[in-house]
View 1 (cartoon, rainbow, N blue to C red):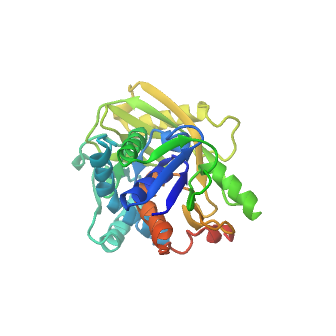
View 2 (cartoon, rainbow, N blue to C red):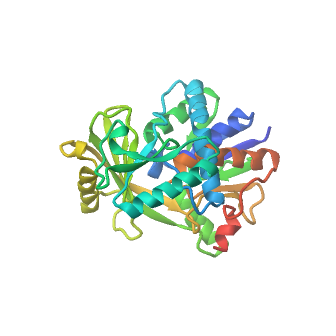
View 3 (cartoon, rainbow, N blue to C red):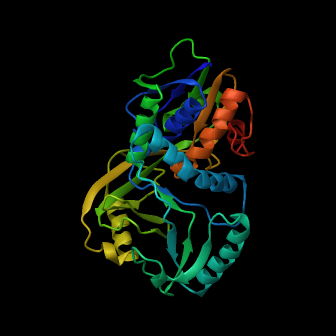
Length: 349
């Protein structure tokens, strides 16, 4: 089997390396810094679907990946012996008024068709869903059973352990070694910048995010989402809060008053967190492709080179399916990438 080099040890690169190795490929991972550097070493870990309406290729791909997630992470854990912190516990979204209730009920009808019975979206009294309480003026929430959580740093560590067991070397470096028969570039914002230079067109940008960990023990609680804010309970007695989306910033890895405002909003959204102490604060850059969806496929003009990038806010949720698609392409020359997610689709976006 051809030797394959994966450039980048973030969630997309590590997931692809794992899938490739499980399918029999000889794989080496090269990383400039360390596994999970950048956005993959964050805190939040919300594996949540887009709303079941305005269906498109991106939403279908995400739906398929979320359905694959439990088996994928179970396999990672079985191979490497480390817990990735995955659990499919669902999500609630507070409903502010009658119009929000009507929209949620319409989405429930769409979900019954689009989600193919694999999960449910329903409107219920907030008191019916155990776990973190959510402030909801109507007393109602939208509750979906498709959403899951993962502890990002635990997920990265679990993948590293699994790859080690599979004999995949993870080395520090800035370029692929000579003689590689295929190279997969999963290098985040730096990769988008390099691709932009190579194709002489904008191929994406870096967006800063900030997040926090609060000490609050709700290990079996669904996550809460409201007004762009994710509140994700984890199994270790922590609740993650995130995240900002900053196109303009001075320091990529520095937290500031924007995170303070996010924490304050989370305490209003979830009264159970009002006195929860802040344990950790994080900031980093996420790779955003022009389409806002991940992009993957051959690197135009570079034979044997492939791109897997642009995970942005949904990289962990999309990783199982993206890894399978890129493995099909690299190993079998089978292109099942949906329209809109290919590299040149983004170049024309």
